[in-house]
Figure 1 (cartoon, rainbow, N blue to C red):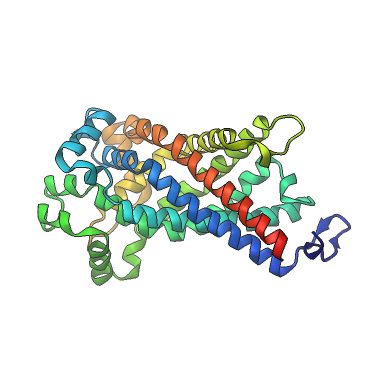
Figure 2: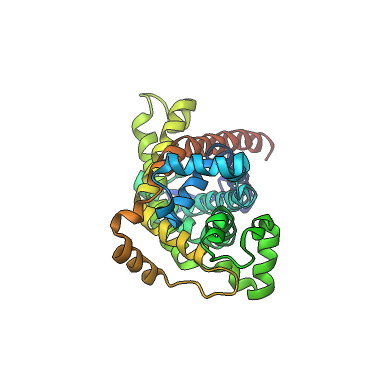
Length: 324
């Protein structure tokens, strides 16, 4: 497109106009917003099961037992506890993630001397994903904190670890947020930031790497990876999601414990102290509690995320190509 090409760098790499870079970043941002919504709609109930099993493994025999007990005690509302902060978290995370993913792809493209983002190798895309994950950790941590505490609030109250007891179950996301800000200030919203980064940065290397490798091998002869259709995109997204969670799950268990146990007004447990405590007192297996429902949830929900993102990106890019 003529308006994109402002010359070349070392005779090989295009220099894209600032306007087009802004438009591309905005498209990635909107695609991430829509993808985040699709992700929560498809997978929230099993995410609740995952958090409960991670933080209170002794209360449930397995994922099905956790699902059924939650449903009997609190109904559908219990399975979708924390949906609003989860939606906020996913929109915040994925909008920032995909926006910075696109920007990091361009940085890697220039470093590697490629002419287009489409020319990047899956490993180069995976490196771009790790770079993007660093930035999205700052938007994800506060909303994940609220989501995890709401999801595990009944168990905390039952074990006498929650100030206010069962009455606290009525507080809701905004009330809990106000409590944290009033007693601890803005820093209270970032309990678990270190463990969030330790999870996100390596995790998204495998997330985008698994997705791009899958797209590469599922692309039919004579077509590009952007032309693989709905089901191949969903499968590629599902594989990327499974790669993410299998890799980062122990770190996610530690993060959930830290965020749930660091109740308002208390100091957050240290990451490595929590990790070694779980391993020493509960065994390595405890670091994988909830992996089953996570994998079951992840495949369709991440498939929906990437399908929605790619569809949004294609529609908005076509519109931009015609009008800019």
